Image (cartoon, rainbow, N blue to C red; front, top):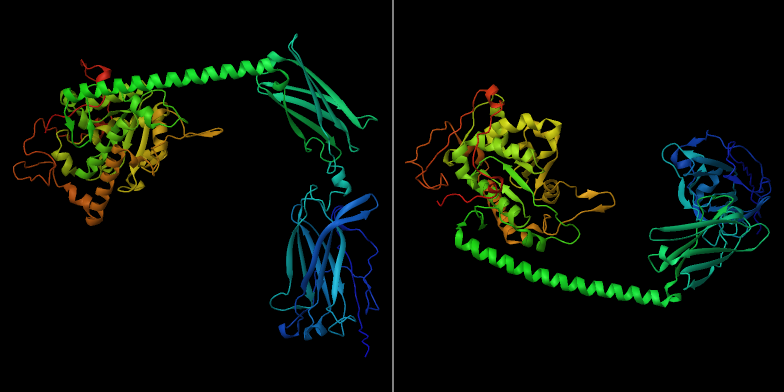
Length: 636
């Protein structure tokens, strides 16, 4: 039995094409066995649509291949696409197929339409009908979206198939022989050879570089470079196929044995952005005496460095042991801090240097004044543990009202705060503001809301230190000259960003202990992220700070307050008092975290708003700057 299918076919390219996205064979031939007629029509945006039951099924992919084809100028990269028609009953309602190719790099596209009518499900070879579009010129390295659909199209839905094709670069063997790749030097092998000679008498180094030229580059730049040294020469090909370049340099100009040799070609297409072959030249084997001197010098430096390090470690251990012995005899422990606090500044540089990694070295010990609100005894414990961590782990001199009660009683709260503020503003030290619900509430009270009286403030000998601190800090904070002196932070496990007063929202708010390392870099006056590098201090990150004793104590304090908040969601409201008056005889130890007997109780009432922001003159005193370190509170 013979099958004579009737087939009508039409093929055309889109009206607008770029010089790159085109078809090599302009005389398109659609003939194949079993087809008797072919016609050509333009692609059109108008397609006949039919109900879904009458629409043909979509095509299926056969093969998509990238290779090379012959153009009038030579070989070019081409894309060949082949698809099949499904052999089912819907083939009799099929009127044709349409293929479109989009260059995603340039947004250029082309369209080819096949119009035909099939009367048999299989071709004369009893296989599926197959159609292809061959010889589509493409660009190396570009990505193309190929889509094919059969028409007429259904009213609802679509039977289009898509495939994304990325053409490989000229380094791929499949298109290396294309003309545009040859003009980019795809097959160029320089065959670099070098000859090195050393004139020991005149201490002169001579390097002769030889390489093969190529057809598509008339000019080359040969260069050698090393640490702090660079030399280059230009050479033209002319009628030669091999080129030589000679370099002569004094040995005193070279600080390293290895030199980097580069050859930069200037091909027709890539011009200044072409592939540059490189080679390492080691000239020290040609000059043994120099090599011996260098090795001997390096060896002596290493040995001397090791001896100096061992002596330094021994001296530091002895000095630290002596200081600890003297301090333990002279001072008592402060239980809430978990470390020894002397009346004079403690030199913790040796212990701090032991904990810091080599990638960042603290050059100067900094001082920081901490401003906070006594919201709760457990929060007070967190502040004290933070001071201990700053002092022992970070080597920072901490100024805290709880640790300077003697001077605070002499000067008064406002004078004490203003004196320390002026000392810090005249130096590179910082003021750390720890925000909490009490800070936000007291700021609102300054702005006219209801007065705030906290239970712990009433119990504390210092009273409310935050309100006078805000009166001094806020007017100075908004000035650009002193803006960088202030650091705003909060413990995100027990507080939130809503606890930060509005004036402090213009600066960075650090989350503790998640962003403690960034905060410490601010205290040091530097940044963690710098051009070309990221600074890091071991033991200060959120995952590492609790590995040291002081960090473990701080972590335990935070977790204790967090657990208390879960059990008492209204904890802050429970700490509020109706009035600042306090009956010492009726207060239990649990209510007030202080002994029943108090001395020098300081009560601070919020003054008039104009007086709050007035400047307070610092009283003269006999304290020296060195005594503003950590101070021991009086024995409870």
